[in-house]
Length: 520
Image: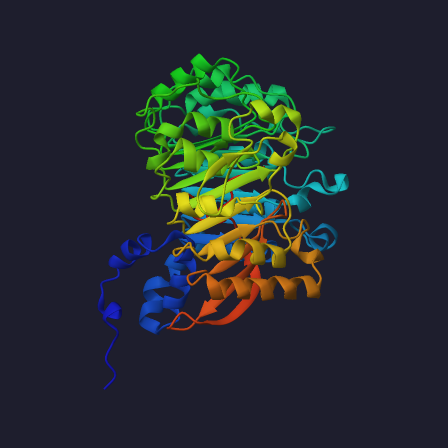
């Protein structure tokens, strides 16, 4: 007699609760596998499969959009939908609809009445051809129907938007009329660097944020303007529920005003501050240790990170932009003598520099020897250091419990990377995910030989880094990344390395299926 699986005996009402506790990034695949187990589980789970839709490419997105258009009843099961999509030449030339047009049609038809999260991530293909400038634009009709047809919407994520130079649409779309979206708890607007938002549209958006201030727990605004945006309207606001904040192109010329803003927002758990080039700091020269008591994830320029050094010990993940030479090892070994043993995720952006001006720059001439002695280069020309020059052994000593490590800077040959940094990386006993710049080109341009070399060197790294699961090339500007996925047997021995699509670092991105906070 075949015994029924214990999970099959559970009452149907429990399955949504079980699904809600599954890890976010694996929830759709886990539910699909569960639905295929037997007919009983299929009847319980089939509609839960559609509750969280994570569509990682244009083909999958168009397939699901057509299913929703053909069978609107399916849309009643959808609670969250995340779409990562390029605009392929085939879609431009032949297909009747693209992803944005199809999504608009689904919303206009009222096929997503119970959706609470909408995430649309547009890749570089939407920007390549001015003939198709209308693609990817979300006009007034979209926002009108989104408000009317999706009354339960609480989270809105739009990335890769572009306000075209000759035919600007954003200012006329109505999205900045945020008083009509007062129930939103999460808003993410990330514009494409090739054509950032106009200053007038930035001002309108910032002025209208006041309507969302009482309810927002998550806010991301990345304008990428060539000229800085005046943050005064924003810094005067109070977001009493704010836990996560991502800002780009807001330049805080008045740091005392900025400090008043930070003092009001002590509830922050995640903070990302991206300014390029680094011309202003967000914090006064000295901050109190209790400024952000709940902060766990921090990304900012080196100067701001240095100022916040009294609170770095409480972090789980840390990303540091715009450092030179060995400033980051200096921070972790000298400024913080105890290091950061609790840190699980570290991403560093580093550039070598041998200019005369570094003589007066803290940490720019510092280095640590292999045996742990601290010293300074006497000649500024000799201070120029890359990540291959005594960088990694200091990181390993300061943050020995890292689970993921990202190295941004110059492109590194995989063989050189493995030979020089491999022995130090092997001492990170918990390291599972490694990210560095391998080939500064999109994955589809990589030759068979380059791919084979990447696999071979990733395999060699996996043999000495006993918990390593993935190695990812983060040099392309767009997702997905080329990723070596490492398979092991029950004893931990590497059995196979396969190359596939991958995304960014995971820790601190619990609500983002593509781990895609904008990087520099």
